[in-house]
Length: 436
Image (tube, rainbow, N blue to C red; front, side, top):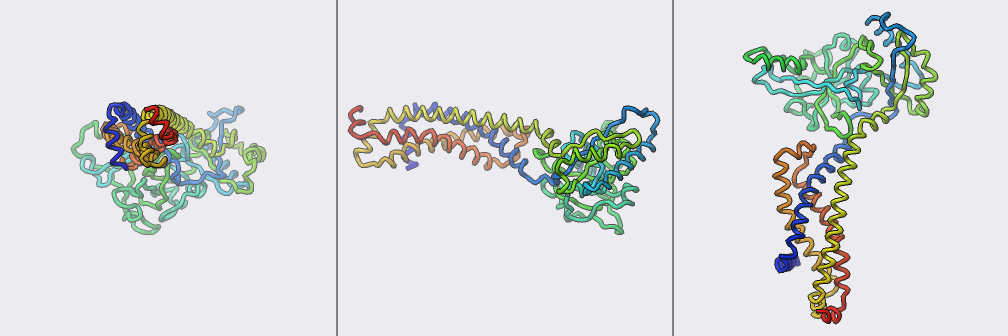
């Protein structure tokens, strides 16, 4: 059947040329749209690595009736510690933590740096990692699971000489699997360095300045390894280093070092209103006062809004393309079926069934799409080699994108061909031969 379809396409090659050009152009465009939608959807539905159910961000501000100049760093820290301890004692709170603004989920603040495995700026391999400063309770508040090891203890928070690591999407930190990292240690063992400070050897001033700007010194031993994590739903897993954050950083409670709380499930109904009503006066300490209780689900919606809109635009473009392809195929093959009434009538007269006629017309459509997919794929891959795909965040295999694109096009062109094929097969042989 397929061989016969190719013969019929060749026999009608003049009328089929424009159909092939249309299919090639649409296939090439749909390739990138399909890859983008697939990659974004796949990333979105991957486990994000933390849990924000029943978790809220407490927002503080300076009181209007105070003079901030009356509070030095020590007084600000004392006030922040008082607020944190009072928050934890509230019966509705399961646990609480504080962190820098670069650490909590769906934050617009972000901090990264490079580190070097072998200790030489020129010869060592450079790695990029996200840097996040958190209190030990951070991992309990967001239910972040440990693959190995543990969270910081109080002594490590004070000393600040331990880190917790999270692997990239391949479950690696350097080149090897993160669970086989030799430098993972338990408390009491001899520390091994996670990274070495590159020596200032024969490098230019510009290189050294760049190094000093972006370098992360991670000679500290590793206390634990947590599961893979993403900054947000649409972003990829990344290499992360968590540092212990001392309570003295609560001097920046009004924004840079917020408090996050996990609420007991049975106390979560109307929690923001109840908590503000009960704790507004208690949490007035030093120059600070509670001004808002925001669910992390709202932070998630706000953070994902731009990506959601991008996805909607991509889906709208895909839908527009597919509708136009459908209408074009429907009209073209309706016209072709009418033009071939004599041929169809003759086939019916010599014994072809209606089903065989339909299969013949549908087979021609499949063959046309198969032919068009070859140059369409070549065009798309060559454009992809220019770096367009990576800019769109498309990392999927070409075979996956090809399969998605081809199946999508196949469904649409078959839908567009089915009705003309059915109408063509319904023609009575005598009537068709009479018109012929």
